[in-house]
Length: 235
Image: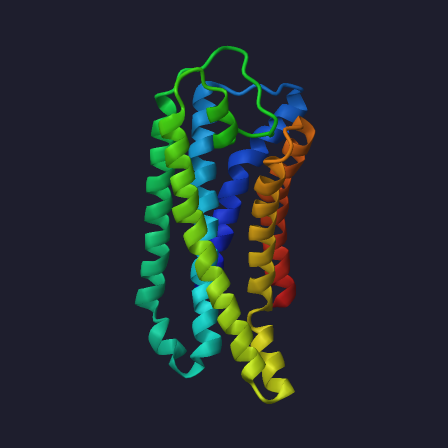
């Protein structure tokens, strides 16, 4: 529940970064945003989106220890380690979002810029710059590999170990009990990474503005909306 509270906080903050501005735009029939507002939106969306990713990774490790080492769970996942894991997640995501935002400030832009998504997405904004974007691209892709690929590897490894440990349980009741403790987490992880990978793999093959806008809604609104529903129904 300590990890769930941080995941909920990240979800609330992430959606609060994008949804209110979208609702204002719908109400006023204006799709404009200031330069400072766009940079601010990018900073907080990267930070809380990355925090979501790291908290899910920490929760994957938590479920791995609970299923694979149940007798040692309280010793391994003590309050000090839990607090440290969450603190490290916050620090890494804050530093990464700060670096990405500061790198964006060095770029020069032309006037009358337009991006397909309903919020300022880093990749879309960088593509509209008039100056050299090679350093930004390098930082962006390096961050995606390290801060995206690393957690994904941990999640996939822990999930495979969880499934193999559950399959090794002899009784059907034991398998059901073990599987029921991580069903919600596996569902949320599949939803989060499934939509993110689907969006970026799909966007690489098409540049249609409508499809890009729809994809941005999927991983910025739908995923974070379903997280509390999945965990609430499980409880």
